[in-house]
Amino acid sequence: MFPDEFDYHRAESVDDALDLLAEYPDAEVLAGGHSLLPTMKNGLAKPDVVVDIGHIESMQGIDRNGDATSIGALTTYAEIDDDEELWADATVLTEAASEIGDTQVRNRGTIGGNLAHSDPASDLPGAAIASDLTLVVEGPDGERRIDADEFFVAMYMTDLAEDELLTRIEVPRGDGATSGAYVKKPSPSSGYALVGVAAQVQVDDGTVTTARIGANGVMDHAVRLEPVEDAIEGERLSDDAVSAAAERAADDLEEAMMMDDLQASSEFRSHLLETYTKRALERAAERADATVTA
Ligand SMILES: Cc1cc2nc3c(=O)[nH]c(=O)nc-3n(C[C@H](O)[C@H](O)[C@H](O)COP(=O)(O)OP(=O)(O)OC[C@H]3O[C@@H](n4cnc5c(N)ncnc54)[C@H](O)[C@@H]3O)c2cc1C
Image 1 (cartoon, rainbow, N blue to C red):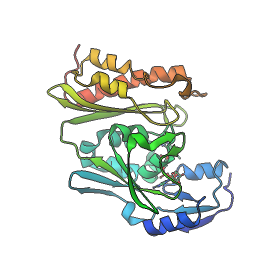
Image 2: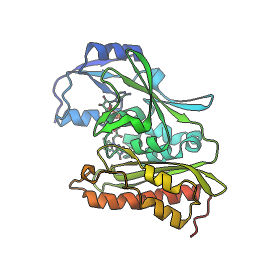
Image 3: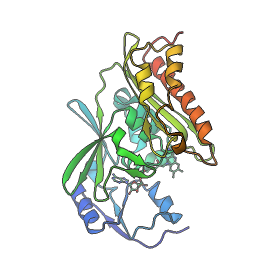
Image 4: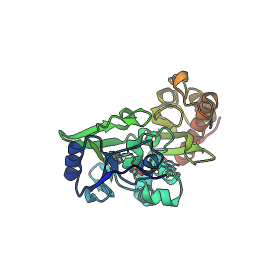
């Protein structure tokens, strides 16, 4: 199918893009285009105006300064996956990016587009929550900083206003003791996450001091699994502790709001959530070099 006709504007800077968004309030922003263009082609999105931000240099690439690593919103999954230093600072995010789609998608799709789109089955939102990322957005009133676990509001809805742009994503610098993992059950047809769980843990002498767990695919938007965090903090990463924590994965999730579709029932997703929470914690434990023993 072909999209309806639309006007195309190419923004050369963030200010230029914000001016265009103010002038055309119903415009859609085009980044990698891997979600926007399919929805325009199948008629789900019919913008009169498209603002192409793909050439804005200040939103590209990975920058390190002081105690934070800053990832431009237009940085592709491939660039994230290729950055060895980022693997140390944000293992979970890097692993999730490496699992997205195929090479073509990873060369084109952007971290900003993935997060701004808030597709429940996307891989990065859960990883963003577990990695404790800060999302920096710019709008007519200047800059705003949003914690990842407050950014995702509902299916395809975020805290981002229509006249704002997600410009960069800040990763807290790891201190070497942070470990993590992202594991997913991919949809057999699309490769998107039926369920994906991201676990980041800080381990001191084999004991978990802090944990952040995020999940996508289960609810209409990515969620933080605080009951799992509470259960594993203060514990050694033993088989028993990991299993007990994973059992609490769905504790705070309203069953009626769980994703339930032709690909997987809510009951199956709930089962997958527990299983993949356990796997994420086990892999994080292996990486933390903590002994997983009973
Ligand atoms: C074949 C295929 C397989 C895929 N498999 C997976 C998968 O396994 N896992 C996965 O997570 N995703 C998958 N995707 C989706 C892909 O990751 C998309 O790239 C991503 O969802 C959107 O990123 P984008 O840069 O392409 O954004 P676009 O498609 O350009 O934009 C998406 C939405 O976000 C908005 N937006 C984009 N950037 C910004 C910004 N900086 N500020 C404000 N709003 C913005 C746009 O207006 C639009 O509404 C797949 C896509 C395809 C085509």
